[in-house]
Image (cartoon, rainbow, N blue to C red):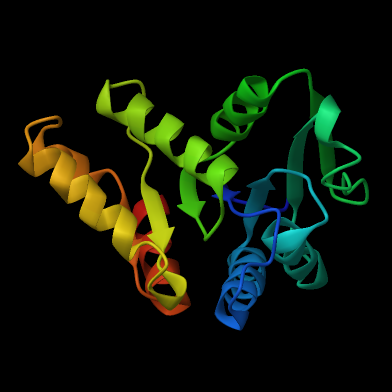
Length: 185
């Protein structure tokens, strides 16, 4: 019987980023998930923000479910000491396994891969394939340009106004915890 009650998928960078606040957000997210009894579902890497969130969850006694494509095991240093370590053939399969094993999605700062993960689940939500909440932890205001771009997409008629409700920004860890608690019951 699992120790966790819900699972939260965290998409985030395989690099630490330029600001200490990004690492702090990752560590805080991992620790908070474990403290709440929520399983971390993430990209199974032991580098960057991915490694930070997983190590923090582990240190706090949390369950960790990592998914990594075969071709990234070396580059992202596949973290094999987690609760569950899944290897996929492709990046797309990785995203699907992560999504299918989670009840909510949290997106921390990251690069192109993180944006790819975010936009895939937002697109799936937009076309009605799921209704899972997607939270953007806006550490250091990182997501402000993306949120402005999403509003421009709406303003220019390329998406319905509902798009703005699919990526829910939260300013800090306390707000993220409250939003997840409300969403997960």
